[in-house]
Length: 107
Image 1 (tube, rainbow, N blue to C red):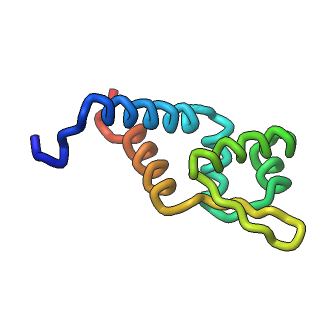
Image 2 (cartoon, rainbow, N blue to C red):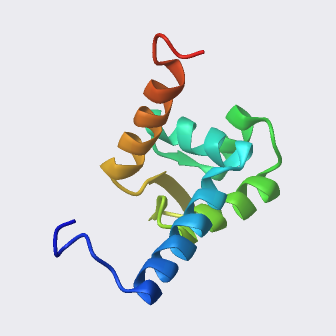
């Protein structure tokens, strides 16, 4: 194991807690649906709610969770808040998950 790969027990524990919390955010079907919609375009809450088929209030709640996890960003466009994925890492994670799920030869 390289020097960089070694962690103290506490550092590993903190990292595992952070990763666990991160994957809990991604484990929700609604939040994944929102992220998938935002891969195609930046959208306001109204348009996300129409595409996902949920109330604007419910979508706003889920967007707040995604923002805290740094998975989405928000910009103000006049009175409208427009959401987008936070960076290409989000796109890559979702793409890799889909590749893994759809991998040929998996049982």
